[in-house]
Length: 468
Image 1 (tube, rainbow, N blue to C red):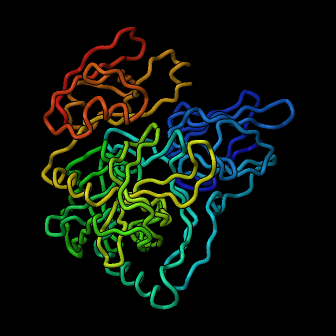
Image 2 (image 1 turned 30 degrees about the vertical axis):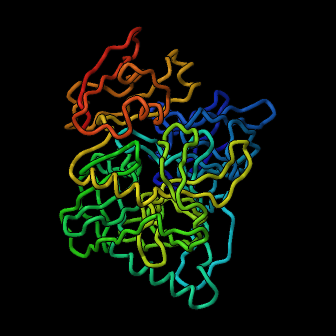
Image 3 (image 1 turned 180 degrees about the vertical axis):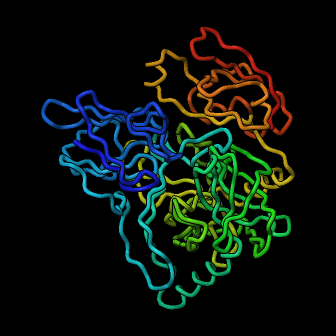
């Protein structure tokens, strides 16, 4: 059987699943390495059976493995299936693969699309590798926290409802930007941001959008502009960036959650995953399902959001970090996550979440001053329990990188080392456990002790550093 990559930077790659099987992931030691920031280091394993079928097994990835739109732990392939790993679509085939082409991602529920300028996209947001640099992605492991995109009809009936949405989108366009995170020349991730302060060039996005990046760009008016991180709050999943070229930016007006009502129409806008800086803004609409609630689902790579707006507005991958707006064009939330499965495994539709604007105001006020919250300067990978057992390691978080110029880098912390405790408190392989141990609102300068287990070592060493 063959696997062929149908989307992303690796589109066109094919590999035959031979008798000894293969592993797909982001790590260079994998048989098929994908240039996708949302793919886990060792994501999925494929093993052929004597009957010609191939068993695909998820290796405890942060964002899950999907076969024909359904998340699987293990599944049998006969050929002709569509798989999704991270944001990458693959196709299985019993024959030599055909040339790569465009693919529709399974799992989205098609709906009618109006002629109002609300663009329909069929794109799924999968979890990306979440890190302490970004907090991420956004999610989503365990119970499958993923964002699907579908077209949604505008509010109201006829031309009046259509014009209301068009007005919101056109008014928000100068305040909404594309955000790209880069590692060298390679894109490590992308999403949407919105302008907090045009005069100071400050842009807010999800922390998981800047996951793994060392340099950053903001797309404004079809052209990329260099940006730098001002402050990060991985446990709040928010980041503030600064762009030097502030021309054409407009500050986005902020609303408040007290005025939100159940059933109120909202608009989510942003840029599709993998889009260029010149991509067109897209929009979906829905209603407020819950004006203020918390999101505390078990997941490896997302924090527990204390204040979110629940809505059925469809969320595209590129909406991460972008604005959820009321019909007055005011920001009422930052689009961050969604659910497609209930805790008992049943399919769920229309449960998407935006960090509530009241919480955003509190966190952004700190980040814009250059203060980060609960950030060590480390990027983390989230190893599956199976991987930890295979390597005979205790629970913990694997270091992916120490960001240059941070205290973590000066302490010579290296990729592949395992953090097993923070401040003398044992952690597991989840971002939430780190946040609980370090304190989700711990400010810059707070002293923190990490228990670090080097590869091959039998005991951990303590590393003392100050939060960035």
